[in-house]
Amino acid sequence: MRMSDIGTIFAAVFVHNAMEEQKQQIVKTALENFKRYGIKSVSIDDICRQMSMSKKTFYQYYESKDELVEAVLDLMNSSAHDSAEAFMQGKTALECVRMLVDLYQKAPDVHKEPPLNYDLQKYYPQLYKEHVNRILAGTKEILTRHLQQGKDEGVYREDLDVEICAVMYALVQQAFIRNEDGIYSVSPKRLIRFTMESFLRSIVSEEGKKLLNDKYKI
Image (cartoon, rainbow, N blue to C red; front, top):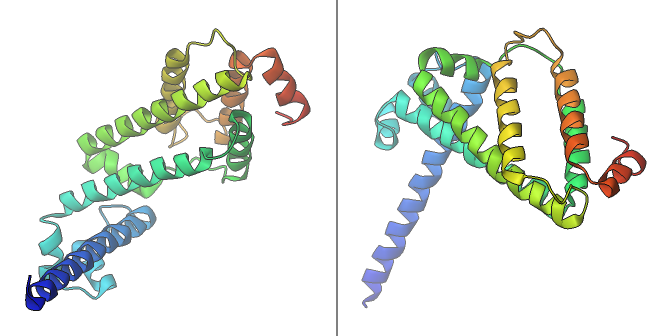
């Protein structure tokens, strides 16, 4: 292979990587704006202006705003999955539970639905439905592994039906999602705390129950 050919290959790889990086930056910029202002209020012009990019360049990556919204949801789902994996890494089942409870307790206790979710439901109902289904499927997959880990560690009941428990908790999460606008007039923190405690008490073994009471104070 000639040196000129090698140079051409390296140049092509560099351009490809640069384009992929810019494509990801468009999605990240859109996500930040959609979270803050909602999807409807943010235009392609706004995103291009913020990134000092021409619309012609934008359309090299995404044919429409709808396609961009789909890419944003893909990023949200992959980020959530990666965060869940990192959260579970190197921890026992009950350590994960303790940290999760702490995170929920520190979260803002608000009823107001995020602008992004509101606009998804109103203007992109099919995408919203698919997004929620992916969240629930991801929850079921992660929780299935968590429950099996707890059984293996002896802190969850040996006779625990892992699949049923994972499905049940995913359904509970679906109720939380539907309650984002506060239709139940119940504090999200109270609701989550009660649900988690009730769920835990129903699945822990005697050893797990002792650890919850003595070590983790749940």
